[in-house]
Image (cartoon, rainbow, N blue to C red):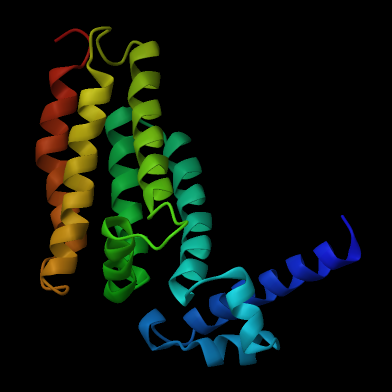
Length: 200
């Protein structure tokens, strides 16, 4: 890596570090680009060299949290039901922590992405792949039946998980995101997994 690349990486990390620090002090929707660049000690124009908007920085930070959630879920004791519940509950806690405005902006970027953007689909694919892997692992381990429709169950879970986030966004936070996710885990998800348990 050349000196120019090292400097670019350092600047990008300064911006990310500044946002992480600011998030400890205030809500994400009250943080400005000016505050970020002042905290990072970089020119305002430098921000736009690496990110289009502050939500992009928060997405990078959030993905680090989601990777930890993934590791925690896959290493959890118990079966696939416990893994899935942990993954879903921890995920919505992170979403709520990063504020309603961030989630609403994410929805906007998915439905109407800017030119050159994937529109948030990388997060959707990340969740889909992780949930599918948990279910397939349970089939391989003999916890779930061999004919378990892994992709179908994954899609049903994704519909409920993302549906809860969408409802939270369109009701401007009036819907109880965490409670609704917990209710789904305790009821519908448990029924789905129990249907395909081996020996039933």
